[in-house]
Image (cartoon, rainbow, N blue to C red; front, side):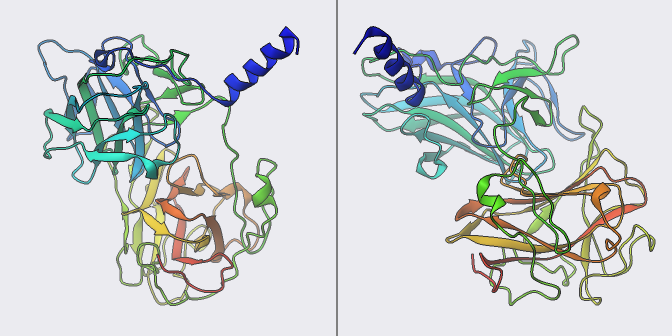
Length: 446
């Protein structure tokens, strides 16, 4: 075997088995966010961390630095979609001979938001269920709170992960002054960290562009204050569902979804409900186990979060409005109305993660008679949206409830129904959401 072939083999091994940077001292993970830290965002989830020296999330939540007389940056994550997640990941620790202590300060604005300290093995493991997590919050209060978490001895390489789950409309979790104290084993290698190299910049300062980080795949990610993330080159296909009356074609679909017939079979009432976390016909004049929120503070792009509304009467006019619910005698949910603007965003989210043990589909009805607005259904975050319905694509049969569905793999998921781009006197309706088996022939438990 000649030298050239050896070099090619080594290159292929490097690409297949990524090498992560290891710390040489526990103090390498100390971080006050004033300089480049040895922590990074993960792109495996929808949320991201960025830094700022002052955060005005909304009229009720204004977060100052810990020392207001000596202001410096701190890290925070926030999002418009309930139950979204962000992961802040350390560089690799080879092993630690005894127990360790991770100390930090946190600020949490949402009562239902979660902050956990997790151990991830092996480094880079994308299976979130395999992380060992510890409660990262000692108490709730809209102020900076000190916390110390004791970690057990660990003999194999691992990463420390700050795992956050926040709830709408603009729940914020902030971190500062991270200190890691441990006796480490001897380091064995020191390669380049996959996805490392990003720095925390400050947000919202004159003359500064939005925070620039690298995601876990090495893509540049631009983040604004409300966690609206744009990646120059998409890392996954965008999947579309299809209505009963037509097939929406999309060249970006993956092969699995290309082979599926995504037409919804139902034209009337739901099957018997056996999954209360998903199923809802809104006829009790409630949102069942969903939540929707609003805020009176606009994001940097001018967008505003508004609530979905319930009705058992006709809404708006006969051209772009909704005459009744699917059964013609109950309630339905709608987004929009007489004060809607293109910058408004309406988000309906499951208030708890939904766990399913077999392949399934979520079936629902949409009323979309106007050419303005977009309806999306997203799974877990704002990137995986298997159903996207554009008002500009409606046909002559648009003035009726239409049946749609999307597939759901086994596991734990959060569902988001999102409407954007509506104008004044335009609405989009939603009714009869239900979890069904993969064939759509019966209801499914969860």
